[in-house]
Amino acid sequence: MEKRNPIVILSISLRFAKEYLEMLCDINKTYTMEEIQDSDELLCKRRALWIALIIEIGCLFDTYEAKNKKVISFKKINIPIVKEKIDKIHGNSIIGRIIETRKTFTAHKGQEKINPISVEELCDSKLKILLGELDQPLIDFENWLKQDPKLENEYIYRKTLDTRNVKRNCHDYL
Image 1 (cartoon, rainbow, N blue to C red):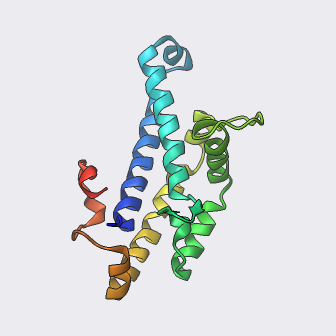
Image 2 (image 1 turned 90 degrees about the horizontal axis):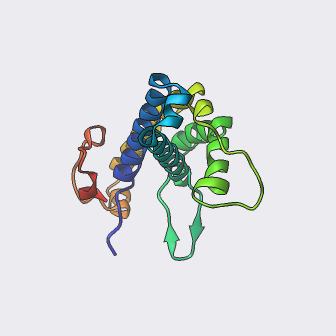
């Protein structure tokens, strides 16, 4: 079975998370809550971006493991220089709140009543900075993979790609 390239997957996922956050916060800055509530289009767009952002952040830090299913995430990178940076970002309380919301309210519906993270909390947090801080660990991981052809073969590079300039038609790489 052909495997996905983790650099491409993580780059795309990180870019999407940054875009969703920016668009979500732009809606919050541009419109009042009353204007959002009165517009089905704005309300739906805001909710969709909120859910997409939460899902994407969850994917970036996924720790799921099963016999026949391995996920690609920053938390699966076990290289000391990268792991330390990832653990620091992952340990931030805003990331924890997002992942808790994903587990109990968006991707899964938990029985416990836990208040999901709000759009305002997301936009007022340092999430944008944290997402920006993920760029370097991604570059470090990519450089580490390029050091050793055996590692590169393990992750199966299908195309040479400058991941910082991934085009909008990302489905070609998925």
